[in-house]
Length: 387
Ligand SMILES: [Mg+2]
Figure (cartoon, rainbow, N blue to C red):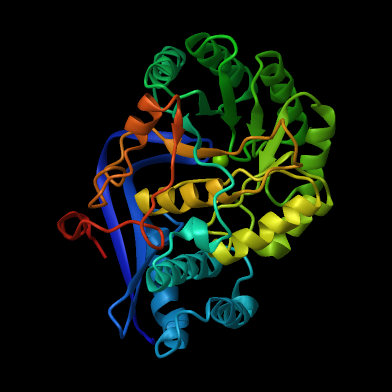
């Protein structure tokens, strides 16, 4: 079997409402898919992290740098191909967009391996450690409105109503405003409901500690990306100052080399690699092994279309118990509940996350078909393709 073509597909749609996080607002959804075609008819599906104009820039890297090295090769040489591409881009980008592109290709190659062997991805990775797991309902993104606290309180109440047993909100509008919003979400969710807060590296160490103390008082479970991803020691200072709330991070970190820093410096309680950015499934599994050597649990960061949701469902299902015993740390699947056409419309057989959550006590199961176990709806893809 040989690779014949790398196809990059950028999908985009306008959003009904602008949504924001601590680094900005956006009004379009983007999904960047990569299809690896082969001469025996199998096609692998992957996705590359990077919205908006980043997707078009990634497309150029894919077409001009990566694709020429792939055509004609055996797609099952996944590890060989990974290191060849990494060596090719190393002098031009050990982090960021070149690695995001490598990630999408790697995911597609694993999909081909699954299709070639008629095995689901979770089986290729050594089997499911759990049949199902909690999906946490992500929401509470910023709107440019004064009544945001009221909106957030209602939004989290609706997430609870849909059957989710955990939820995550955005923060990063200033410590005082954040505390007001976090209090509103705690009110809307109720006591005892599992809540997480994500500030997308909006704060200095001092500000992060101030906010973290308030979040801990409100019984938030984790505090995500408190400080700049480059500030590994700052993470450690925040973590040392905040026993009783988990410090999470890692979505803006790349490959085993980057995650090594977060682990060696004991920067986080929970590591959150993003499979479509950090180096793909191959690198995710290496980072997972390294995290376990440090006794650090992994809960993947998830952001993308149903292609990535499905990939992450497999990944969450195969995470080994840590540390081992009757009482286990439980990984979860991140699921964006805000309106998104690339959820539940992109695939011929929808993942049915909302239905699974409602009918299975907030828990979901990965797809069972070969590879990632998904097929794209060609008409939908054609309708929303912009590049
Ligand atoms: Mg985050």
